[in-house]
Amino acid sequence: MMSDTPEVVKKVFAIFVVGILIIGFFMAFTQMPKGNAVNVNDTVSRFYIMKDVDQATQMLDKGTYFNKDMVPLRNDVPYTPITFGKSSNLEDGAANVVTSIVVDYRGFDTLGEVTVLFLAASGVMLVLHGEKRKVPKKKTAPSEIMYVGTRIAFSVILLFGIYVFIHGHLTPGGGFPGGAIIASGILGLFLGRQGYSPNKAGLTVFESLSGMAYVIIGITGLVAEKSFLANFLPTGTIGDLFSAGFIALIYIAIGMKVGSELSAVTNAMIVDTEED
Amino acid sequence: MITLFSTLLVILIVAGGFVAVFSKKLLSSVISMGLVSLGVSGLFFFLQAPDVAITEAAIGAGLSTAIFIIAMKKIQKGGTNDDE
Image (cartoon, each protein chain N blue to C red):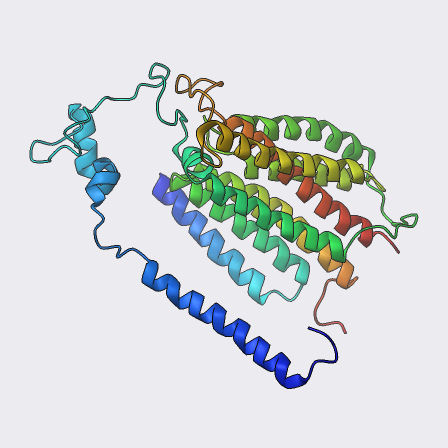
């Protein structure tokens, strides 16, 4: 709107916009599905519906997955047990069920989560950009043991973080914990040496590239499988390192992104602290 | 055995929470908050959620404690509440 428009016109325009938004909001309710027609037995494994642990253990001991009085979930699909290291070409192929849901079935959700973390980190770095840096003068410098020890520990911590996010589809862990572990190692480097500063431009470029890699993997899924973030790689044998399709790729991207983001946040805070 | 250890962890968590709330020194509050995170991470591990346990240990006990301490150093030099 122009600056010389009368106040009334502006108010009418604002009321119009808000009214359209409200109408659209309430129209969404009329379009929603009823939600009372879901048969839970169709979609979820019986084993997870049955909350009785004793009964489940008994069934596992007897070797019978289904009880006699229990109806099989679907009659058209025979029950085939999944064997670790043998079953191949499964729907998802990840040995870690949490990762399989977080990255594969709910991949778009994880993309939003990464975006939330990115926004938080950019907010911190907007406020504390860590540019104004003078020569730090601290009374107690870290000792030689601290200096050497944090450097030795950093290599081990970095290796462990990389292990956690590369093996995200096999063992517990994944991109977020792996990145946080790497950032903790970099925090140790900060504590060990006075005036330590990582390459800020490198961190930024690294983070942007890995964030872009996530979206590019998603778009590749869109091209190959006609759905954004669809698993376009073969799933392989369950339990192998090269299995579960693109989960490992996405977790490598997330791990690098989270690690560089949290390191940049720590860098911004610490460097600004040592300013005086 | 696991029950005993979990009980000890819960006691640790509650005690850490009390210290974090009622302590006069800000630094001990922050460190006991890290302790609470560590105990919660152990509990998560016993409740068969190792994913969450790893994340809680790395972020709750490691990074957020450090960031709290850095922010505390930035705000005030001493770290005590009652000497102003």
